[in-house]
Length: 154
Image 1 (cartoon, helix red, strand yellow):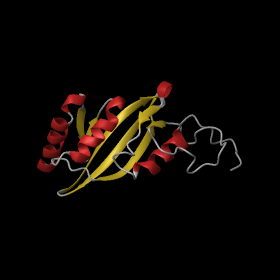
Image 2: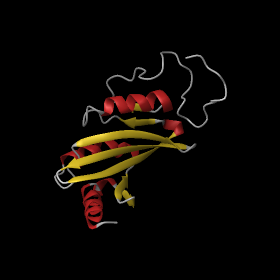
Image 3: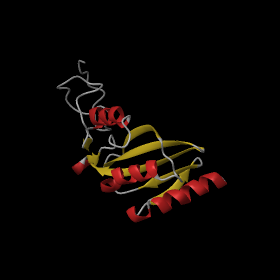
Image 4: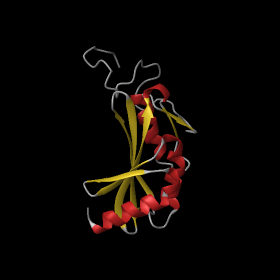
């Protein structure tokens, strides 16, 4: 890991220390994982702390690991320019996570996409109406369990 990546990882751990984060690096991009109930607080801290300066939310992704989802939030700091992410695991049995739309308005579209394709609900989201699928579509085509070999009219 580069010196800049290590510095960013250490700053992330310090800023989020009260949230009991886990940390590692992937391709020199610092990754921090928090419990789902801390997602909103972690995002607000990342945006507000001058050491992290997470001004721009690049994307919110949902990954299906068959037993749980992992929500990944990718950020960009503009001064200095650097990228980092946080993630949280969301169990299938309680596929709900706090919305971060109050921190970054751009999250609205990403969260709607995750809701459409994976069925993850976002507490506090202003509008979880379908973004990609039509109203009444059955199932969640982003999930590994979705039967792609069966034809379904769109």
